[in-house]
Image (cartoon, rainbow, N blue to C red; front, side):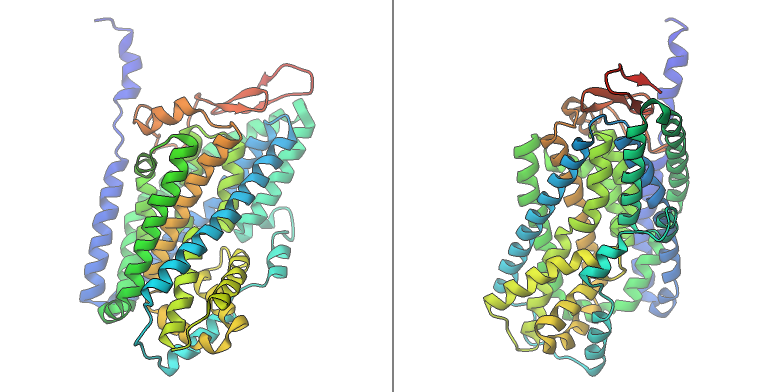
Length: 466
């Protein structure tokens, strides 16, 4: 046995202890459920614990998106490549939103889940309050522009951060070699930000316990029983959408087995389930899709944009909830009314992206615009909206993961061999740093970038490693 092999073997021998963290999350979720049922009043007071953890994750989203997009766009020679990725992503998002609406429409008309329910006066008032929370299309568009260059980071608006990052990335791209020191500095900042995120993740069990205990304490068993039909129908519909629609797409286009991809993202799904927020997993989705082998420009543009525009679970929810309320109030909607209402909601949902409880807000505002009498019924569903928001978040997250892989394949910005190796477990994701050092990423335009340092180049010159 040679002694030279020992130093190389030591790094590989380090055990990944983060699996204990996610075992603890599962235990915390179960404990939270028990506390919620046994001591509901006490459980309600734990809501700030879950909210605090989600807020810790959210504060990392803007810097991670900024670093990812700037490094990706700044290392691409041809600016048209970025526009192609964004245009293709938006076209795909619109198409999938239509598919999700159609599926929800079909299931809702088959189940008729709202028949036989009564509405109290308090529930009527809750519906009208929710309608006032939704943003209009004009407010949404103007909201993309931050007040200052740095306010996008302080306000935590994903699309504002996306806009600033694209502008900075294109500027560095135009600067050529003179922009290399800036790219190098942003690369180090990205590593720092992911390290901080890794530290925050150790608080996940505490956040999961508080969030789950609070929602069980607030909802109670009686509400779950009364609205079991709509909840079960919604969960089954979302599961079928993921397995049948997304599974078929990713298999046909990329050759990847959906269940392997979902297993690879298993910890993120657990995090979403315990916090009921897909935003809590957004930074990790960016890191994991890069590790999987999708290029930085595709990941940096598709994932943040998808969190506002690729809302498959929300589309299914809006469809089934609208039909549920119409049936509950004995005011069924005709097919024509259903289609026009849902097309409006598909557009309005983009304006409410990022708003807490946006599903309820869009639902109420859509009903108020098309059939005001139905707004009184929104209060029926508010009681179990938290449980339905988990299915929405899980479906939205799965849709964005699949979309990233599909867009990468269509634009030839994905390393298929690396995808196979990662999903087979041969290249495990580094849970300690959340970033890879030194691995090759897919080609960007006419050259290759490295996993830890991007390449900057001037027209007509050879790539220079920063």
